[in-house]
Image (cartoon, rainbow, N blue to C red; front, side, top):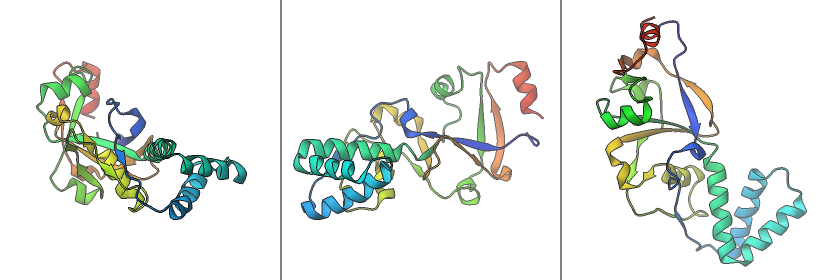
Length: 203
């Protein structure tokens, strides 16, 4: 492993295998004038190719119809959240289910890190919360990062066996994140790993 690149691939939230990830109830408690100001800024950032007139029409339409407003805010949340880079890890390296689902039916490997890995190499690794209650999102009153953190860290209880943590990085979807090799303590081989792959792991 010494000469190999050591990094995580940060996937996009739109590639999650659970279609119910990133679901929430949008709260609408802000006065319409302030709401339009926030919408104007976020639409400009998310849709830079639209003309000023097109953005004005969009703001008018979504502000006038509560159903359209909620639907459009959800679209904006997902569009922005999809730009987050996400790396998923687990605390249960011996789970048969995890090896079957995420390591090509035991043909892959698992990387083991020491307990201080998030201090030495990362800053925003957080535990996933398992709940069948969708989060309520006050889209206009909270900071952007907090909104997406709520969405990206909530999963249905059926996934609780994964004991998942997620590393989140803004504007880093589908990019590679190097990590400090000193935090890597072991490479665990799957029971069906190919001989060539096993030899490659020892290099």
